[in-house]
Amino acid sequence: MANPLGSRSSRQREAGRRRVLDPDVRLTVDTPGGVVVTLGATEVAAGARMFSGEVARHRPVLVDGVPGHMSWRPDGTPLSVIAFTVAGGRITGIRIIVDPVRLASVRLPAPA
Image 1 (cartoon, rainbow, N blue to C red):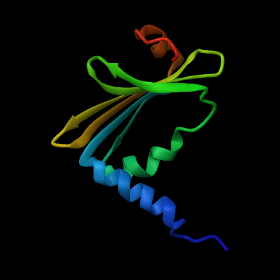
Image 2 (spheres, one colour; image 1 turned 135 degrees about the vertical axis):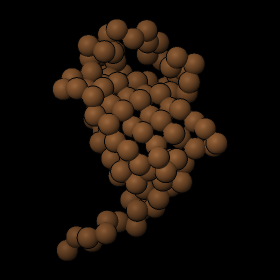
Image 3 (tube, rainbow, N blue to C red; image 1 turned 180 degrees about the vertical axis):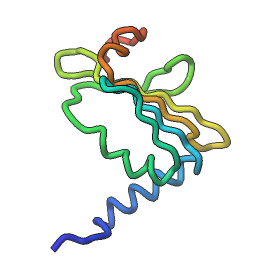
């Protein structure tokens, strides 16, 4: 029987995510289908699992001067770029681009 509250480790990971997120954090994701916005630490932390898939390489990068993360597919094409806005020691904004058209228009580093 599945635990309706989830496993202890997944609950701990989500609680850890909420500690680094500002309560009013804004997550904006540019997808091929449009822009999706999620507001609030609980909602953003709960949605953190949505980014899975075939990542061959990834590394920290600066995105317009702010800390971020870049991922590439096995064939070397960009998969996603994530930028974080931090204030008062907490993440107040997260911008993710997964739309291939938008990724093609962004100056991106080469895979490491």
